[in-house]
Image 1: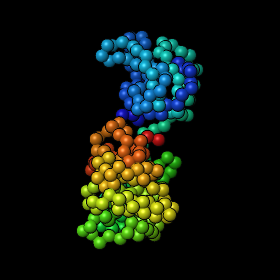
Image 2 (image 1 turned 60 degrees about the vertical axis):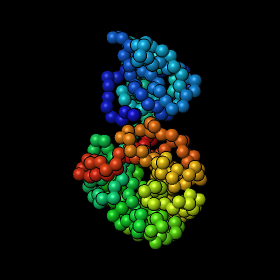
Image 3 (image 1 turned 30 degrees about the vertical axis):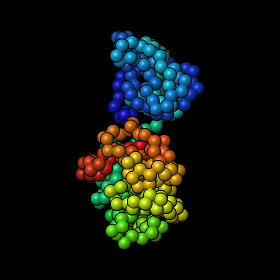
Image 4 (image 1 turned 45 degrees about the vertical axis):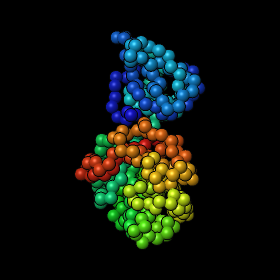
Length: 318
């Protein structure tokens, strides 16, 4: 998984042939080939195009040249993106060049962002505490609509509290999600009316979100007619957008397949990928529903976080 906090002894490297953009990868960042040489490698990544890099062959214990792009260079466990070039191991380089590299690292680095969602009440003080915890929780997703079709006032207050606690400043963000009423056993309103109720209640409660995520989980007893489910999602998304919020979809590959089949009609919206694997990364994601990459990964459920708060852990890379 991408390393977001821990540090190793700095490696001095020489960078040249800067001509490619590198944005994500996985694997180790630093390797020692002998006692007096440290190399930095472009780590194994998702999509490969011609770009030289050097990496230790763990099995044969030798240095070899690989080719791959759209990866991320890790130096001291910090991400550097966008960036490109060959990384050449050296023993000594002028401190001025190293200082310049650190400036470039600071300029182009992006970061791992941890967030959470919960249906329990969270105070503004707790949000402020979580913002400064380790890991720091920089985004929150509050529930706006319950699966019985009723609005969630606790979720709205959490959104208000999250903003008051500082999770709406700079790179911090606050979103909301809707668990729609879809079961045939419930007397459910239309998708349009449910979305309108949720957003109107949010506005009346003084809350504000950037994006409204539609939760699509098979456990909520969606009808068996997949085309009807597709129409429901389309209508709910349209209403959320009409009321001024961006739209996203929260689901897993299996849930999506069960509820709507191989439909790709919502792939223009961001994906909040549900895959409880304990890994804060996009590793293991396989394309479905027209999505080639998730925006957010929910990787742990029902966890004790910091600051006496419990919830589901989420992650994204910005």
